[in-house]
Amino acid sequence: MAPQPRGSSSRIPFGVIFGGTDINEDAKCEEKVRVMEAVLNEARFAVSFTEAMRERAISNWPHARNKIYVQPQGIVTTPNISFNWEKCLQSAGIPHNGNSLCYFLLICGLRRVKDPLYLADAFAEWHREDPSVQLIIIGPAVDPVFAEEVKEKVQRADGVHLLKEIPQEDLHAAVKKCFAVVNSSISEGMSAALLEAMDLNVLVLARNIPGNAAIITHQETGLLYSNPEEFVQLSKSLIGDPCLQRKIVARATEYVTKHHSWEHERNAYQNFVLSLH
Image 1 (cartoon, one colour):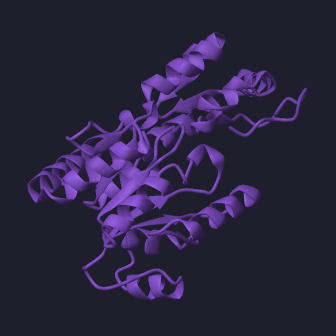
Image 2 (cartoon, helix red, strand yellow):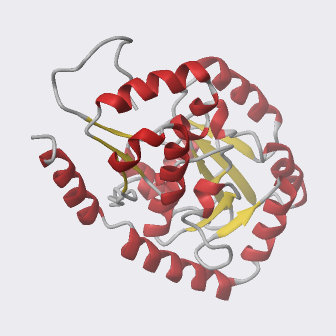
């Protein structure tokens, strides 16, 4: 949500979209709750990605119940077919050796709520046992101070690497080169990275939090883990079970196609915008 200055009144009709951090984290701060309430008072509509997010919003601002709607994120992926994954890894000093390495890709902006270091120690221990497994954290330094902490930690964690953000089309191509996409966030609204991976026929492993559980059914469309040790255990099992891999990928693709159509999302927002007039 984009808060209006205190005491202001916008002459332009507008709506707002809850992103996840606002509902899951900012709503714990009384001052931010008051700011968001002021915005909601003026907004013509508000959009949440899931019914659970809508209910949490209503619990904070019950007077806005009738203007809060649910619209899941729509997904469209556009992998760059000319993207050179090995060259990208080489330029970043990350091990690359054809198909002999097993890459896990953690896509996130470097800020604390995304908790990108959550798996670092457990993954490093696994890597020392099996050098073929590699965890790559990729994304922009949203919080520069925290990003330095991530960089320093990664330098000491075997098998864990940090890669700067790349254009979306290249990122989609990189996803297709990986074994799985990982999410380790403390909280999520709806992870586009997970949905895009599912759309690209790539496995997903996500921390078992409400936002992730809303789009992933454990062992059906992906895997949910509750701690780093369970992540390693589930990953090992998945690597050793190609049949389960195929089943999860097929079900995940079917789920995204059915529930996260970008055409449906576009039509919904067109109707929202038309309601402003």
